[in-house]
Structures are given as C-alpha cells and as structure tokens.
Amino acid sequence: MYYAHFFLLLVSQIIQICSDRLTHIYKAKDEVILFYNTLSPYHNRQETYPYFDFPFCHAIKTDDEHEQYYAQSFAEKLEGYDLEPSGMHIHFTENIPTKLVCQIKDLNEKDYKQFVKAILQNFWYQMYLDDLPIWGIVGEKDEYRNFYLWTHKKFDIGYNKDRIVDVNLTSENRFHILPGKDINFTYEVNWKKSDIEFEDRFTKYLDHAFFQHRIHWFSIFNSFMMVVFLVGLVSMILMRTLRKDYARYSKDDDLDDLEKDLGDEYGWKQIHGDVFRSVRHNTLFSSLIGSGFQLSCACFFLILFAILGELYTERASLLSTAIFLYSITSPLNGYVGTSLYTRFGGKKWVRQMIFSTFLFPSLVCGTAFFINFFSIYYHASKSIPFVSMLAVASICIFVIFPLNIIGAVLGKNISGQPHYPCRINAVPRPIPEKKWFMEPIFVITIGGILPFGSIFIEMYFVFTSFWAYKIYYVYGFMLLVLLILAVVIVCVTIVSTYFLLNAEDYRWQWTSFLTGSSTAGYVYLYAIYYYFFKTKMYGLFQTTFYFFYMFLFCAGLGIMCGSFAFLGTTAFVYKIYSTVKID
Image (cartoon, rainbow, N blue to C red):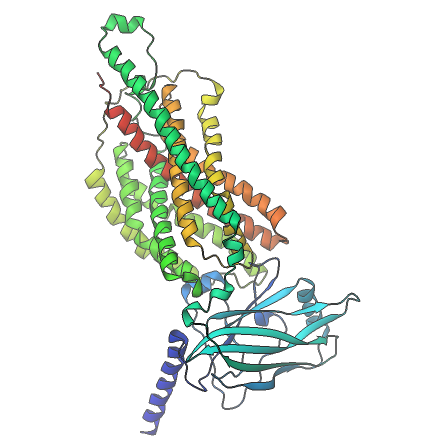
C-alpha cells in the first residue's frame, strides 16, 4: 500500500511538472526550471556547442534533489538544441538572494585556455526559462589582455497573474581568471509583477525597427508596382502581337498550296507539329516539376501557418511544421510528376515515381549528412544523432513514399493521357539558325534578373534573421513577395518562350524551367556577396555550413521557381495553339 501511494504521488508530480511546461501556468512556489542551451561565437551564430562542453562547473546537488530531464522533440534535435537543467533552484514568485551555484577549484591550464578562447571569440550562451530565450556573454578582456569571466547571474522575472511574461539577465561580478584560482558562480532571482500579456511576451524579441523599416515597405511597394507594370506590358505586347499573328495565319489559311510555297512563312505556327514533343530526360524533368509543385504548396501553407500561429514563439516549431506539411503534400508530387511523365510518352512510371519521391529529400539529407561530419569533428551541437537520421529515413520511406504512390496512381489514371491541340510530327523539324541573343542559354541567363530584382531586398532580411541574431516574424511580407515572385517569373518566362517559339525553336519546356530556376543562381551569387561583405563569419566549419546550406536553399528555390515558370508557360502555349486553325 505504501508503494502504491508513493507511485501515485510520483506520477502526480511528473504530471504537474509537465503541465507547467506545456501550459505555462504556475502556482506560488512551483518550480520553474532554467535550462542551459548552447554556446556560440557572436559572429558565427550557427556554430553552436553544448554549454557544458566548456569547463563550466555543474550545479551543486543536495541529497533530496530529484533529477530534471527535458525530452527534446525530433525537430529540436535536428536544429541542434541541447537543453540541460542549470541546477539553479527557481520557484514561482519566490525571490532568491545571492546564492552559490557551483565552484571551480584550482583552475587548470587547459580549462583556462578554453575560457580564454571563448572570451577572445566573444562567446555567448543561451538559456531558456519557461520557453523564453535568454542570452548572456561569457566574459571580456581589457586593454592589458587580462581575461575576465562574468560569474554572477541576476534574473529579473516578470509575471502576470499565474504566468511568466518577461525575463531579463544581468551579468555581474567581473572576475579576473588565472590558472590556479578558484571561481565561484552565483545567481539571484527577483520577481516583479508585469502588465505584459502572456500573448505579447515575445514582442520584445522582435526588432520592429529593422523588419518594418521604410526600406522594407518601399521594396514591397516597388515590387508590387513592377508586377502591375510587367503584367500590363506583357498583356499589351503579347495581345497586340498575337492579334497580328492570328490575322496573318488566318490570311495564310485562305491561300492555296502554291501561294503558300511562294510566300514567306515563319513564326510559331510553323512548329505546331513539334511544340508538344516529349522532352529529353523525361524522368528528371517531370520529377523536378512534381517536386517543385509540392515545395510550392508546402511553402505556401507553411507561411500561412506562420502568419496565423506565430510559430517563432515555440522552439523548432517552424521546422516540425515544415516536415509535416512537406509530408502531407507528397501526393501532389506524385500526381503532377507522374501525369506529366506519362503525357510525354513515358512508360516506366514506377521508376519515375520513385525518383521523384526521393529527389529533394535525398538532396536535403545528403547535404545535411555531409555537414554532419564537420559538426561531429568540431563537437558542435548541430551534429545530428544517428537515431534522428533513422527517423528522417523512416519518414521518407513510410510516410512520403506511400503518399506519393497514391498521387502517382491517380495522376497516371486521371490525367496521364496526352490531350494536345496539335498532332506531333513523326520526324522532328530542324531548328533554324538564329541570332545569339535568341539562343536558349542567353534567354535562361537573363531570365532570372528581373525576378531576382523583385525579391533581393527580402533576401537580405531573411539572411539576416537566419545568420544573425534576429527573429523573422513578418511572414505576411514573405507571402506577398512569394506571390510577386511567381507572377514576375511567369510573365518573364512567357515573353521569353514566345520569342523562342517565334524563332521556330520548340525546345521550350527545359528552357522555361531553367529560365525560372536561374533566379536561384542570382540568389546564390547574392549569398556569396552577403557572406563576404555583410557578415564576420570565419573558420572552416562556419564557411562550409553557410555555403552548403545556402546551396540547399537555392536548390529548393530554383526547383520552385522552375515549376512556376513551366506551369505558367504551359498554359500560355496551350492557349495560343488551341486558338489557331491547324491543317
């Protein structure tokens, strides 16, 4: 009976602790657990190390103290969070005067050098109290190259009724460190009532002056006006030009064969028998379009969730939501990719479906696992555990793959049959010579300039929030920029495709896709500029981390932009060839 009561009491305590962390509701003298997270150089934010990898001492434990654990989520492990209980005893609304946390006795030479390294590189540490982030600096040096640690942590915690709404950390007691010295680490806690509402407690972390600067608003307005101008210009030019083309082709239809032979026939109508010919590398092309459509939908819904749910208030919630959305949108990949593949005459649709399923996940996992070797070598907290790798593989195999199969089967049977407005010639028509500026390589190269111009200001804010100490929260701006980008890409690609078809070059499918994708190439060039001129990053680990993850970001952006371009251009090509009488 005694053991049963003890078990029930233990379970109730565990439930109480979990409910406090999940609901953020506390009663007087309830324990509030303070977690250490990671250490990182100020200018290398992504280069993070577990706090206790450095020679900080662990808190002194009493005999009756129970162990505190934190079960990290899957997304937190992927993002490199490494939460460890601080051992500081903090209770709701209970002030604590200066109290000893732990002591380093007789600092040895090795630990001294590690502290010096952290001070020279301006290391900061991160902590969490009730999911509110706290940052503090390790130490500093003076002009005489004396090194100091901040050994006292003063916490000022604001509360509104039964919830914590504000935390401030003041680092005090600058202690001169030398080998052989003893170091005492202390803390104090002061509670005060606050008028801040619980829903607004993250507001102080948001840099409104930075993200809502006039330049940001002006760039959005400028991009919007460019879209209006571009859509109007494209509509006017194409409609007038196409009207002339229709009139000329209508006149040509009234001529007999001899008059046609003597006439000067040219233009996009002449390649009607080849314009819907199957593309080269059909498996790769259809897989890219399917993956791009899936990524576009997943990103669109992710931004909507971020706008409505304020995902920045929970650790790793953006990544976990992104994984969930990418998984459940997998049928779109199978449907679009396989239906496109079979319409182009592909027979091995199962192989295409498998390739399409693992195309982008393999790119992500390959990049992450490669960088993981550097993380393991540097003992960084960004290293992904083997169990997490297996979890990612399991999601791909047991969730994404079956959903993709469902979409592929539906796509093959519902819209897998070709329904072109023109018959396809048995023998391909030779492509005539044309001027250098009408070659696909030139069209692709210049096609990404205008779309990049519509988003490069937003790229600065995105890069700064990811690679510096900013929390990105203006997802409404991001949604508007994404829509602007899609419209600009479609307009630019339609114009490029029209001139290409008018030059009797029917290789428009790959050209349209690569024209849209070239936007990502300019983004990567901007990322190179940003690294060298806008950051102070250094070291092999951070450089590798930056350029490989930027490559991954640009690859995903390129696949998305290419799918925008192809889908918009496809509608245009179908429209113009379905309105012309073809003999």
